[in-house]
Structures are given as C-alpha cells and as structure tokens.
Figure 1 (cartoon, rainbow, N blue to C red):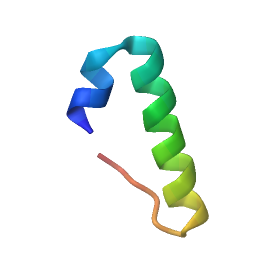
Figure 2: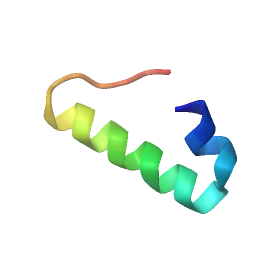
Figure 3: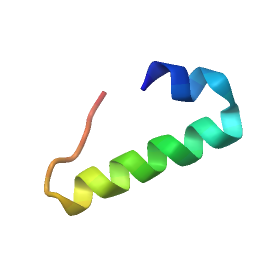
Figure 4: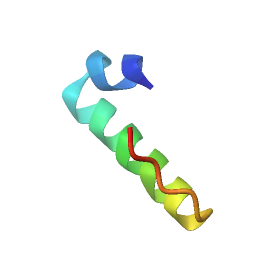
Length: 32
C-alpha cells in the first residue's frame, strides 16, 4: 500500500481510507 500513498496525496489518502474502512467493517482494523 506504500505505492498508493506516495503516488498521490489525494488518491492515496482516499485509497488508504477505503482500505481502513473496509478492514474495519470486516473486523480487522489495520494499524500500519
């Protein structure tokens, strides 16, 4: 997921927030 955050501050943050939200819904919060 490092490429997503360094690729673009806007798109990277959106992708990361989406990943965290999805992981949270699955009951697996990410703390990286």
